[in-house]
Length: 111
Image (cartoon, rainbow, N blue to C red; front, side, top):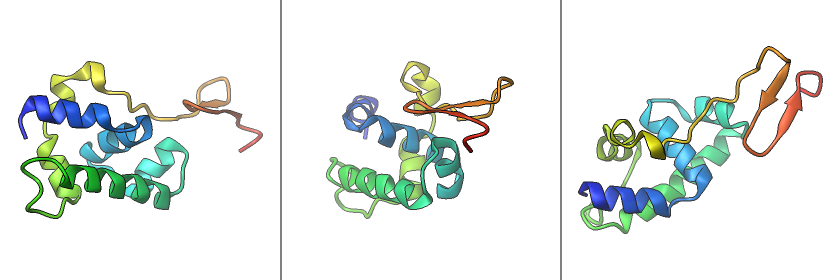
């Protein structure tokens, strides 16, 4: 896949799939990705399955069964070359005692 195909493929993913892909390409496990996205590890696995299926339909990948290594290899350096496309941010406690998440806001008391 060339850069244009990678970009088109990436842009066709959902926002959550993009975040999962970015974290996986950074070398995180499903459990680590789940922790950062405030979801269950099985949800990360579901997103990865959808990404693998979509990637398998792409030219150049039809002959192989996409897997984690395929994603990391295909997207090696992609996010460094396109930092404007990188949306993965860690949900981490802030000094105010609030955990920020793209779709939710929690106080530390609620956790």
